[in-house]
Image (cartoon, rainbow, N blue to C red; front, side, top):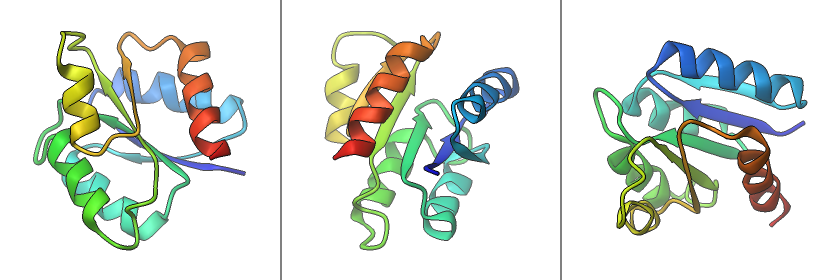
Length: 121
């Protein structure tokens, strides 16, 4: 079973997405801010991270950069989740080290396709 770390501060988004992922057979670990996300990336060793970019404590850009420079977590794929679907955001996410990018509101079939592609690598 693949373990996904969901880093999301919005309780409604977090609950809905984690339930849907669990129904698809994923083991879901939750972090509610960027600092906790970095800590859990190290302690939980997930197969993939879904990273909200607008987070308290430490934003998703910073958290992703920290995860991608650490030897024990640098190979974990990260998908950026953001409501800011503006031009340049995808490039900024990829520059921060994210492996892919998805916009909110989440379309589960589209997101699952990205998850499956990254897990197959």
